[in-house]
Image (tube, rainbow, N blue to C red; front, side):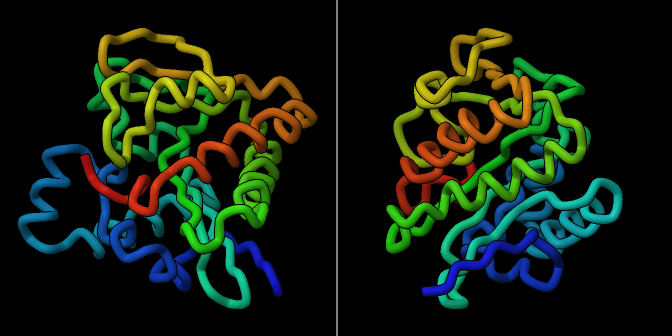
Length: 205
């Protein structure tokens, strides 16, 4: 069984799960997202966002393949590239942090260490860029799979609340050194990826 990690590019964008390929929850602000959905242009907008982010910042996602079949992914970017982030009441994301947007391991591939493999790839990118922290918005009222991750789970894997809110706190995980990245963050994000249900990271809120 072969496993391969690849950065998300325009060439392999269609290897994202179909629902995620069409989803622009994080990539557009709420008004622009509504317009794109009404016009049926979400796939185009997703491609445009990935293209611009790749050109200006670099890798913004990772895909993992098992025997050539897409098995999971993770998406991430600085807050300046994530318009939806400013719509949250606890925004803005800290300027020194990268936002963990979404991620998922397909259910038939869980338990194979793919989450760790994905996060190792993310860690290498972020360490090279001198990133100091990862941040995420949590949902305190999380009941069903959605793009906003459950706050309780983020807290349980090491994130700390930096701006409280009754519904959408902002949480942060310090990346003190490359060693702490590899020992703490990889484990935490692997658990997060594998905890999601099949549509956990793919359904717009």
